Length: 278
Length: 359
Ligand SMILES: Nc1ncnc2c1ncn2[C@@H]1O[C@H](COP(=O)(O)OP(=O)(O)OP(=O)(O)O)[C@@H](O)[C@H]1O
Ligand SMILES: [Mg+2]
Image 1: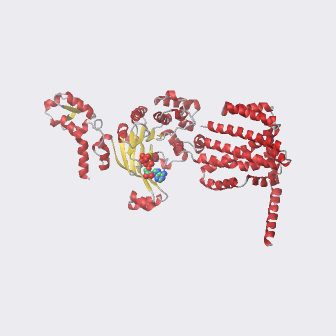
Image 2: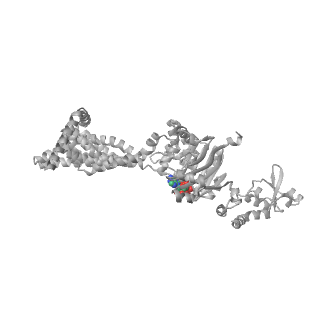
Image 3: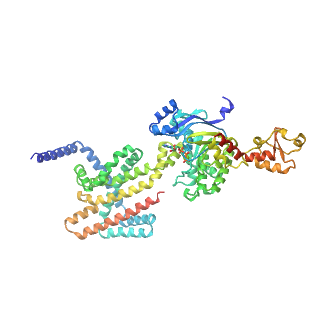
């Protein structure tokens, strides 16, 4: 059976390749891991700094200001519920995971999006890659990440980043490339430099689209962070994964409720922020 | 250089703009065998936007370019600040060939010498009226306090002093267009390019803005190139008017020139509906002094060669002799009688009819 041997050869080849990358790139990967975990730990430390009720009130207050009074109360109540279920540390971990992955996705995706928005050629190259990322099951992205970064939050953040980055890239590129022609003409006719046109004209016009991208990235990140529980990300995802394995259904439902609360609160707040952009 | 040459702000010489991927071949065909617009479209799939336009904008004048949709007005006006590169020909602004300018000089030219106002106004939605008016100055790097002061003055000039802190969407179309004008004059350019700025407004507001614009431009001593598809507007605003058709500038002249001596049947048809009461002046109506006896001439009321038909009618009716003497620098150069007046007014149909016969 020649083909079976060929598959074996392929597997061996992959293994060898991985080992090669693992050994030769180990410095780079441990640096990446250090960076991701450092960022995550820092953010988590910040979130843990205030007592739980201060953070709950702060989020409630923000929701009140941006969304409305009713939702402010609901958001605060939802966070109190997370605390009441004894899931406050996990909630904060999930929040830190989502926020760090989304931040990286927005930074990297924003830059790629701007470049793609300016250059149709770059867009022509980036678009199919993004489509592919969005087509494949998100689960897959855990594989390369765990191979290089090992078990833990760094892997979760990297995989979440991959899943979260497409909407920001796409909607940033869309916003930047769709600046109405008459405004670009205004820039040129007033003698604006390329940078001035970008900052004063393209960016303000793209702001809404970019914010929509950020919101979508945030939501993608939420979905992925829960899946990433399987690689020891910590947080609510891991709680669900662990309690399902031990058939502790009640606890997994609690964790699910906490995830729903967090998702809705962040979604509404980021959507409201998007509406505030002119 | 003569004085006259110094007074020319924009000098456009044999300028062409050809759109399309094969414009190089099209240009060659035009140069070598004088290919026409239709031929160029058929053989090279290129559109001739502007065809061999030559004209000059002089200091302090308002030059109107009038033509129907697709005649190449927007293209032409964009050639003047190089928003569009000409395919052939030369555009000089204040004696400098703008095709030779580097990016920096070009930016400086656009920032300081040539302002532009757009049909779509293009006020940036997230900025206040004041910050919109200050946009050009902001681009130039003028400090905030200073540019706000200048922009406020510009807004006051267009009667919008009280609206500085509003958002553009809170303003009516006419007010928005005034902000666009304020933004252009805030940078204190010598020349203002206006691409159909009032076309989207209703007639009453439009008339008002036309008058305001003319007065403002004159009082600031600016020159303007004003694009319009409305002949009435062109005549109301322009010191000189150019008429465009299919990318070709078919006639240039004062409103009076164009009404009295249309270059071809197309122009004649356009001007047929124009009232001559304010356009036709005594000097183009008057008959030789010999038309009236010397003693009558002596007691006739006097008027200047620039008096329009409306004024002449009033004068002629006010005297028993039904005539008025046209005087220039103290000498009588002609007379306008009831008869010459009637001939002058009839001229429209008369002129149109003659043209038809000729054509
Ligand atoms: N970027 C372009 N590419 C190809 N053809 C163009 C382009 N811009 C203008 N044209 C063509 O050039 C001709 C002149 O267009 P232009 O916009 O200058 O007309 P206009 O007189 O301003 O008309 P309107 O009154 O509708 O604004 C038209 O036939 C148009 O299709
Ligand atoms: Mg136009």
